[in-house]
Length: 180
Picture 1 (tube, helix red, strand yellow):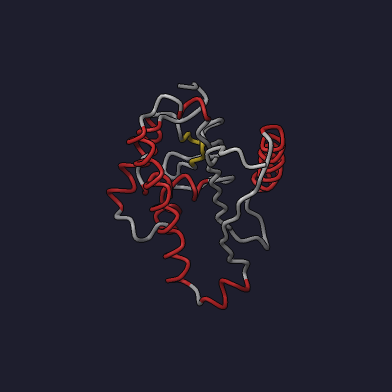
Picture 2 (tube, one colour):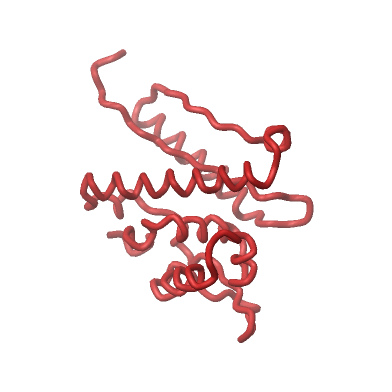
């Protein structure tokens, strides 16, 4: 496993994925996380925060006080690298992906519970699925460009006049069956 990637089994839980989503590009106290994840019982939230801190996925940020620890995602722990996934079994991959999809569905359900559909559409709600045909080099370019763009957005962090958006992506290569 890559030393710059969180342990897979640690992230295979919807609450932990939601915690990391809440902390993407920002810091927050456990109290602020509890407010954002109001459907997660406090004891459960604290247990998962503790596990992520113990594993080095989360860290205490500068400016923290003894009473209000500011948490953030530790450097390099914001994504799973392909090498970290290489040794996982097919069954483990199915489980990880199911957790990922369940977490995404929880995020979507919370948005629907907190806003009307027209409000969500006006705010930019979209979901789609497309198939693109790329060479390996083109796929590499697409990945680099997406990482650059998303990286720029993450660097901006929360600020006045912004709202959080969840961006999820899945790239599933299909078997090469000689189409050309």
